[in-house]
Amino acid sequence: MFVALGSNLADPVAQLAAACDEIGRLPQTRLLGRSSLWRSAPVGYLDQPDFVNAVAEVDTTLEPEALLEQLLEIERRHGRVREFANAPRTLDLDIALYGERRIDTPTLTVPHPRMHERAFVLLPLHELAPDLSIPGHGPLRDLLPGVADQRLEVMPS
Image (cartoon, rainbow, N blue to C red; front, side, top):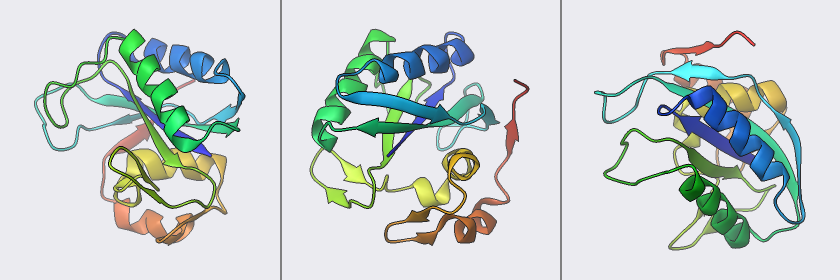
């Protein structure tokens, strides 16, 4: 399964590194890998700093809702405040994919409902799993041309 990470406040690079460490320490969970860091322009609310994004590959036996609660707790510890849609944030953790499962509850939608439209999710995901197929959307490689016009750049490691 894959978690999308993003931050544009309070040292985003450090935020993502710490979040990956914390994800790897969750119960019944192992961090298998993390993409490169990618700088992206904000979406929606544009008057804010660029984001730093990545995708983490995770092996977990936590059920999706339990994993979501753990991820929200990590966000809270990092000072995440939800002021308004697309606001600047210290940390954003989203379950992008949970295997082949499709989930639609009041609190969780998987695959993430807009991931197929977002270069900052698709390119890091492609880095980790180029042959992946997104349930309901098809092969990842077929989705990449649809986000080719979005400004995204890999950051030096």
